[in-house]
Length: 284
Image 1 (cartoon, rainbow, N blue to C red):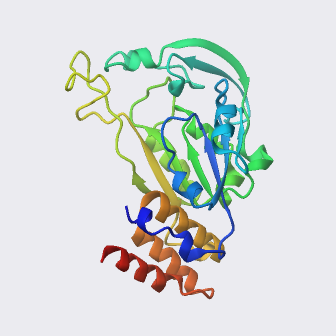
Image 2 (cartoon, rainbow, N blue to C red; image 1 turned 45 degrees about the vertical axis):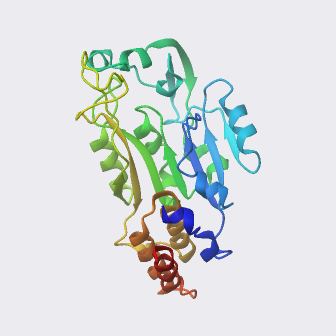
């Protein structure tokens, strides 16, 4: 990707404040979407993960100034955390075994091994997340609860990546349509869908791999941005922060240019033409 060849930090330099990334459901499983921001020293991460030992592991891995807290994030009420055989599928919602049984391997991954009463925390009530620019949500069906408890945070955030489901893997969970409506009500528009999670309908196997699917879309990650027809509502530094996230994490170069052009119309910098030159040089 061009973002690897052309780190946007070399263009923006000291023109934009440090980004604050909030990762709700930060259980480590491969490189995070914001890893390139971290490698360029463009962000500080505040992560939340209640799984035993996960915060200690993350703190060791990333170090200062990043911060990881063992809170269950939700709507601020009491809940029941279902710990499952695979920690990645633990949820505040009960796994929907009637649906899971239809697909390869999902019943085993989502088997509940323990239920723990918990007190959830609203993002709006946590001082460490104030000034968040970029939210990543991966809480296995409870994303709408997090969104409802983050009114103030979402009012100042710029980009949100959230897991969404197209089928109810958990009983009573909100699906993509409800997440999308809630985000649009808060001034965001859908930017992209990041692939699609799938499994084959049992008993069929695809190439002998129970993790592979055919055509049934079950879950994905949706990326939301502030409405790009209302960029006049963003401060100049927020336009630059949005550009940094979208360039580095998603390669959305056309939208980045729009943000930079909106910035240049209101503040000194001439970032848009310089960005275009750098892109053209990278392609040459």
